[in-house]
Amino acid sequence: MLLLVGLFTLGIETMRNAFAIIALASLLASGASIAAKADKDSLVTISPGFSFGVITPDGWTRTKADFAPAVFYPSKYSYDRSPVILYVRSASKAELGLKTIAELNAFDLKGMRSQWPRISSKAQAIWSLRDGTSAPTYSFEGGQFQELVAYIEHPKSITVFVLSADTNPILKSSLPAFRALVQSYRWLPELSSQ
Image (cartoon, rainbow, N blue to C red; front, side):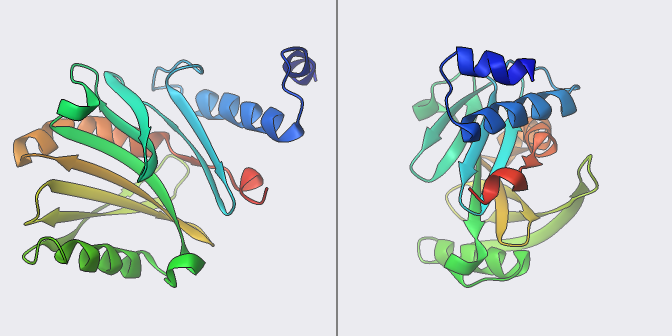
C-alpha cells in the first residue's frame, strides 16, 4: 500500500502504470543473480496480448528499434558499430496465423530466404528457465549474420529472443549475455489483457 501511495505522490495516476512498476519491482526481485537498476537496466513492455519484462545483461546497453522494443549491444560499442546485437520481440499467433514455435521458425526462415537463399535453420538446445518454462533455440546460418534464436511460447503469443552477430566467434563470445537475457525474462500475463 505504501508503494502505491508513493507512486501517486510521484504523479503516476493510473493503475496500469502502478501495476507496471509493481511488476518491474517483482521482476527485479526474481532476477536477483543479475545486477540491475530499475531506471536503466530493466524493461517492462506492455502490449495487447503480450507483456514481458527483461533485464539488460551486464556490460550491455539497451535501446529500441523499429523491429523490436528491446535491443541490446555491448557497451564498449555504439549501436551503429556493434558487431553483435541481442533483441526481444513478441509475435501474435493470431496476427501471423501461426500456432507453434516450429511454424514461427519456418515463417522467419521463409522471410530470410527472400534475401539469403542459402540460409538454413537448425534446432539447437532447449533451455529451461528458472520458472520451468522451456525455450527451444534454433541457429540461422548462411545469411548476412550468424544468429541464435530462443522462442518462448504463450497461449496467444510467442516471445522471440535473437542473438545476431557478424561472425561465429563473436556469436559464441556473446552467448553468456544472451543466456542471461533469456533467463531474466518474465511473462506478465496480468498486464497483457490491458
